[in-house]
Length: 343
Image (cartoon, rainbow, N blue to C red; front, side, top):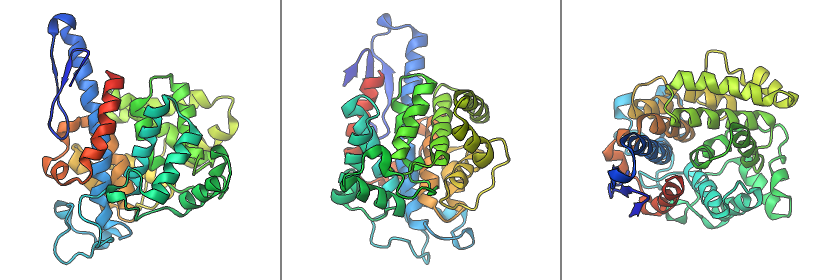
């Protein structure tokens, strides 16, 4: 397929090459190729990280295999968390991220009602789940979708647990940053909106917003730590005049403090897990470091893997993992639509 002077390759992770240099400056071609590679890296990086973490979920680091033995198929003797689920299968993290991207592409905006409807179809029918099989659902997500099904508006459904601060909205938000063309303020507002469908607490909203700004700046080519610091400062600026969100950012998220995490599902702890994992220098190192923290291994690896994929590009994801990832053809349909829109 050719789109505005760029030829799309057939590799499972995608490749891009200039088709008509006479029509595009070399610099522009390089910039576009780089951006498209980063977008593909983020897309596949999230799904691969999720699938890699599935067999190890709910285990403490003391019982996990050594880093070098963490693979889709764990070493002999390790009891997989979901023994009936074939290796290479993404979980609720990946399925909900695909549902979000599906909604964004269909509506060309962040539409809470449409997104909630697609999440409900995932929950009840297996939309975007590999084999249509939903095997992992967060408690608050399930309760929110049940409330939506019973008539609660999408923007209020996430208040079913007013103090709920799980990572269920952070785990899926990356496609918003990959898709978004608006200002930082608009990206933050949409990050909040996708969160409130299942996780409405301002802490969750702030974590989703910060992560999206961080992903945007890495996508633009900033180094990881520089991008993070710039995103924190930008979010502070955006939150001026919004005291509740600013208070949650400063007093609960505490983005300037050294990150500490034991791998749990509390949204701030998850963000800290990602910050720690992103100190590794390769995609493989990042997702394995996220898993080695233990506990919510699939979610931590999905969120960190998405960022690492953006940072390092699609070619950084090991081919052995891409080859074993199930559901690729299903997911690639959405990726192709996203790339056409970006291009």
